[in-house]
Length: 216
Image (cartoon, rainbow, N blue to C red):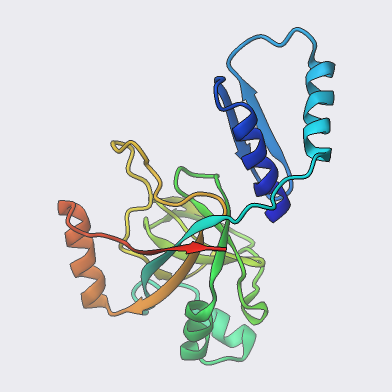
């Protein structure tokens, strides 16, 4: 993952003065050009040479975001099932889910959907065989080896264990999604009442997400 992000940064520096859009996934990078490419093979060779160079030795800086999650039964649609399958108390599942520091692999599927790696291995759970047609926005789920938050109402096949009152994607802002690939995320538990208060603050624009800048 670090290799992908470091190469992405090197390409962004290389194309800083050009209209080039660079997006990363687990182990790939998509480069979109705003101009016509006369010889694609020369461009591919140039990118390969760039990759073969030394890069990624500079210190990196990322944000650690602390996101509130309510694990109340009202939201935790699959927590009982997860507890039964894993033979683990719900409180222990919540503790493990909150103690991990997750890495934002990339953002996709839905605007603001963070693909988070670093889930405790005992919480790994396959996607549901039959996805739900309409999940509540903010639903926190587990799918395979990852966890994530559905930013909007809509269909989804992950196992839902809670809900976050945080608005993950604000289309009217210059930076619609607060996080970027390479950032870190840690969840913390809130009560149903606290969830409602944060939700109300979000609606009025007075809620500020906790974060910390870390030099690696």
